Length: 398
Image 1 (cartoon, helix red, strand yellow):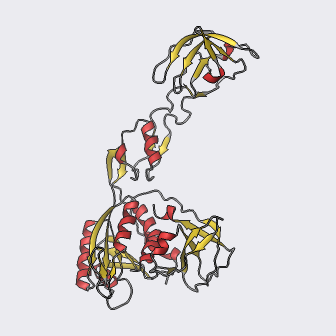
Image 2 (spheres, one colour):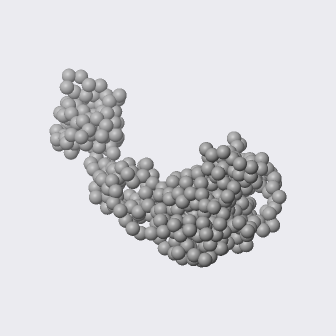
Image 3 (cartoon, rainbow, N blue to C red):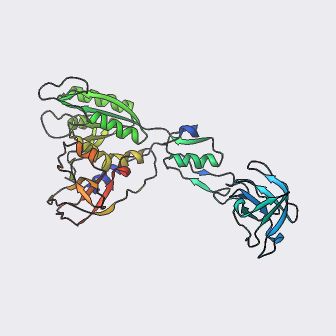
């Protein structure tokens, strides 16, 4: 077995990111990866504007320490260009309204009173009061989003604020996935003795889709060498990466490993990780390949730790460091002499980590109960109160 870190280095060693660009409407760009830096051609806001409903004036018109009556010379709603402010007057202005030339402060309407075409304002107002300056948010020429960033809802709003109608993004990766195992049955069908439902198919599709990739479902493959090779060839021809679940161990019915070796190369196999030791990585006819174990928890953990960062890099996405939160264990665990363990945990009301009742790699319920993985290095015995690096599912699975 090789360590998790050694496996990651080997997997990333020959990665070449996909760089094909397509231009799409901004409204369709959620979750897509930017192909170019995005620069603003304007300032936001484009002019000084009012942060309040109130009155705009020049503070030089005021006498300090007393009330000041100023004639109202104009009305400035948002979206209307104002006239220059007449000397010793005020403008009725609304939130977002452009500050008239000659005005340098705004007082909110609650601090003023208006009578017979005049407004009374306090005298102790500083220049710049309640004014949002031109370019306060963004200046012309600012880089607002960088190449390789995956667009979030707030990013779409930001790009819209600089007038961006379409963006160049990396073309979506196509990820083919398949399951192996004669014991597997699709939900909706009846179970015969010795059979189980194929949960990995749905987990993998969900993981692939949640990361913004296009999934290609090859389906369920029979446990024969010929069927396995046929399915791998089809998957490699249709996608940018192939992911399988099951069939990567050393049993007589595990055909994925020899099939990959005959169709390409197997670069990584057997990692010191728990769960997920049989994970494999290689290439099928030039297409990157991940062989995940068949146990359902192993699928989720190895995808999160090994597959996800690879696919993001293959998509040209700028890597975002995964937060490792130092949290205290509320449980004990025996040391594993060889493998780094990723334990399913939940953060309790006290901010400590509770462990699921079983850490079996077949206990898929643990992944629905948990909200994080606690990282336990090899040869590390855990006692209550020990601090563990903790990886949140909200970071790992999105």
